[in-house]
Image 1 (cartoon, rainbow, N blue to C red):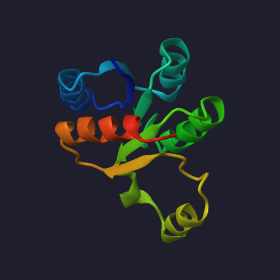
Image 2 (cartoon, helix red, strand yellow):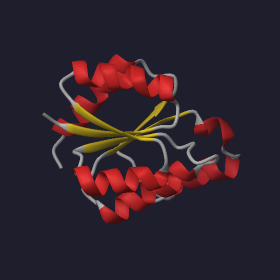
Image 3 (cartoon, one colour):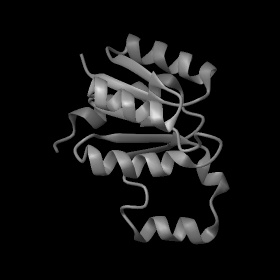
Image 4 (cartoon, one colour):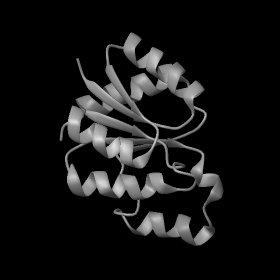
Length: 129
């Protein structure tokens, strides 16, 4: 059973996503902060991470994605967020040029149906590395 770490501070959304992921055959751990996410990843060794960019009162999820990429370079990251609404034109342009700016395998804009999230994770985990 694939292990997923779900990182988001929206408890209502987390509950819906956990239900859909468990129904889709995933084991799910949850973290609501960047520190909690790193601790959970080190402890649980997930097969993939679903990550919200807007954490800890700001856009700390982007920093967290880079931390995950450095510490767990083979760990697939899927970012689900509305953060793109808050980016400046220069930041959007920079993310197109700099592959390290947001080192995620998939980026899905909220709102995402929980079933779609489960589907995307399934595909992500079965892609050749």
